[in-house]
Image (cartoon, rainbow, N blue to C red; front, top):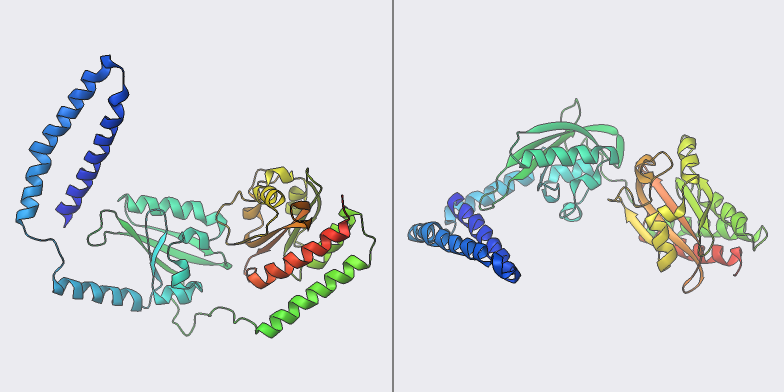
Length: 373
């Protein structure tokens, strides 16, 4: 199987070189002899190397996996899923290929949701670059690695990640096996691993959102309308704490200006830096103001999606953002009066679709209170 893989890689390289030679037909006439020499060299390579190797591989019979080998693979897959240690299989870009049962319990992630997404997206921002670099080194064959990381939903709990190279049967590239365990402790059993926080009933969620909408309506009606900064400040006060950890308000059209930044009590310096930020340097805000559509992100992958503060640090990293809502304030289709951006951080539950819909409704009320152009 290894010989077949090597032959396939060499054949793919040959096809790429032929494509380059085809593209080189447009070179000046004086340079064509060089291109012709390269083409003759490639033909010799096929005749002398690739074709004999193909005949040898063909004479060895079909490369299909025997029945006993298939049974062995099924057994290994079952062992991977049932082993009582949190294990993930990722590629060199940390994209999750498989997540066993223990890993889903340990991280609180569903295997179907995690598969196809980078494992770094579930880590704290500060750990992502180091984990991505170590995974790439392991995939290159530079030896196994181990490092301490933090899950984004539990940033206070250190997790030891051990990375080992693995060459799956029949695949040309090396994968990376990741074993997770609490730093300095043994891997907990299924009974000791806390499961995901149970969701509230639909009725309770609806009542909570209706209380928020009622509080927003009361705040908007209790003050004078037509003063956009004052309206945004009242609205931000309702949302801060009970609905979002951070509330950032930008007003004005077409040029936005930052009017209000409310942050957790221990992030005063960060709030000052974000308040001094130019909204034009925040891609999410610019896109919301231009397109007039709400953006909901859970575990934002791009750390620069909300730009950088005055110190040069990505705002999403500095605020430890785990989910965000970026809502345009529109009075009519295409008429944007401002943008509200809400952050949740740490272990707080991510924004849900129902919450995004409620916020979309409140945004229209806020825009009406701000007045018309």
